[in-house]
Image 1 (cartoon, rainbow, N blue to C red):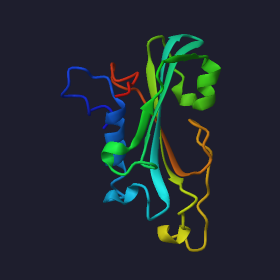
Image 2: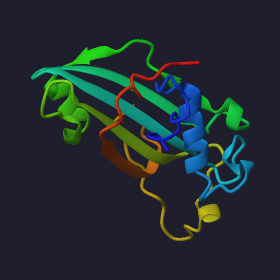
Image 3: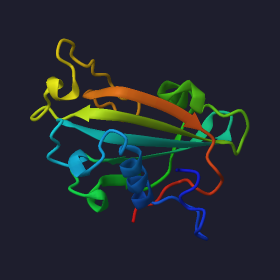
Image 4: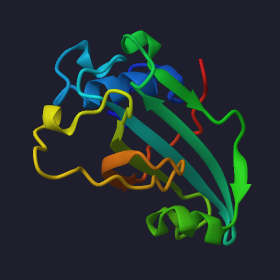
Length: 170
């Protein structure tokens, strides 16, 4: 979806609204209605963190993080979303710390880390509603934003089509 959503537009750059639509569409396998939105009957919400890097030189990378999640929205149009306002600079070691697969081989190369996960809403979470009667789902720390209430984390690193990133808010 990330690679195709802007195909019909002349401006190929992704917006925070594009990312919100991607998040909503990608969580419909589990949430097949508006039950993904607050207040969630399952006590979890869906979140995706996007980390874009572009190699400028061997130890110099452009960096931007974006996110979209259903934790505070009430509908697809009000999904919590945003992109870091300005592109920052990071070193190769800082990029490797986030994910070793983000390290690029040559100047001008780009990578995108997509971290999709479910996050627990502690006030309404009930493990039995998800079918966990004996076991407790193990929570993990996000490598992107550092939050600790995540489970079922999935990492994917891709090379995005040119012009999609850096993302912009709208």
